[in-house]
Structures are given as C-alpha cells and as structure tokens.
Length: 275
Ligand code: MN
Image (cartoon, rainbow, N blue to C red; front, side):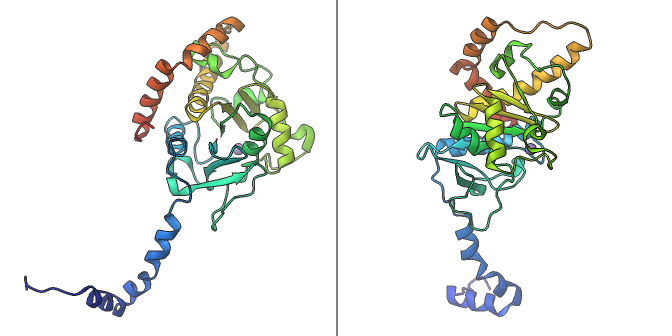
C-alpha cells in the first residue's frame, strides 16, 4: 500500500462523492476570501489588535468595550473591530469607518453599536489618534458619585487634571444609555473638551490619546487610580497630584523609556508580540 498515490483530480472527485466534504468544498475559497484582510498590515492596525488583547487581559474591558485608531492614511477614517469581545479579536475583524460611522466596506459584518463615540471624537479632536471606550468596574463608582475622580498617584498623571462626567439624560432624556447617534457622540465629545478622559454617568469612560500605546496605558492607570482613590477615601482626606506634578509626571510617563517598557510588559502578559 505504500506505493499507492492519487492524483489531485482523483482526490477531489473522491471528496465530492462524500456528502460532508462535498458540502465543505465550495466553502474553502469563500472562507479564504472572507478572511482576506482588506486593510494593509500596518503597525497601527497590528497594535490595535494588541490593544484589544491587553485591555481584556487587564480587565479594563470585558465582553464589552472597544478601542479604535485613526487611519494614518486617511485622517477622516478610523479602524476598529467588528462587534466582538476585545479578547477574541483578530486582524480580519477590523473594519474601517468614515467619521459619521458608516462602514467603508461592511461585507456582512456587524459594527459596534457605540462606534459614534469614536467618530465624533476624531472629528472634534485632530490631536487624537486613538480612542478607548470601557466599562471598567473600578471606574464606575466615580460615574455616579459626587466625588470626582482625579489623579492621586504619579502613574496616573496621564489621565489629566480634569475628568468631566457626561450624563446622556441631560440632553437626550431616558435612553438605553448607549451612545447610538452622532448627536449623542458629539455631545459626549463636547463634554470631553480638551481633556484626556471623560466619564459617562452609570455607564463607563472614554479615554483619548495621540496613539494606541498611550490610550492603553491611560485606560489602565485610570482604572488603577480609581481603585487607589476609592481605597484612600475610606481612610479620610486625600491629597491629589498638583497641576505641576501632573504636567511633569505626564512627560515622564509618556517618554519612550516608560511607555515602551510598559508596552512590552502589557504585550507579554496578553500573549501578543510587542508591535
Ligand atoms: Mn458602553
């Protein structure tokens, strides 16, 4: 039997004669076509995949939450995954959108319902190239309490001095709490203003930055700061960073020495190659 050989045609014919395989046969090229990434293999896009995995690994996002990057080739477009949990996202899940939230090429994929958050912010802030939306459990108490979240530890200087809270009900009445329209996105972007973070009452947070690494690091330390501030409040009066400390520490945190070291660490923990 060791000398038995089949031609390619014989194998295909044999496979076609078996019901299951015959049914599978035409799926192969379709599947290959579906998974062919329409986006080029740019560093920014690979980094976006890493960001999704990191934010999931660090519990900044769970089944929900998302991260996007402005397309470096087309500033009026941004890229994010199709509607899928961040921990599971692959390169072929990435979709491109115009700033009004319309997909450039949907190919049957379902986008995130809250993508308008991202487009509205990219439209309002030319300095922003990456956006994270999350429902971090540690941050949530500060979206509903009177006590404001403010940077209390040096690693969190990057969250900025002012962290406004946006309440969807103020302008839109009772809703399902999701940012579903560009009007709602623009309202949120307006409350964000020139800040780095904005909290959403009873919902979560949005973090913006000049790049993917920065928004990941900021989202992570927004969460850590919230944990620390909540613990410290139980001990009594708290001392936040001064305005000057925020500026000086921010520079240090975003220096290549610090951010590249953090990025390598985050990637390693998330099981992705640093990009
Ligand atoms: Mn949300």
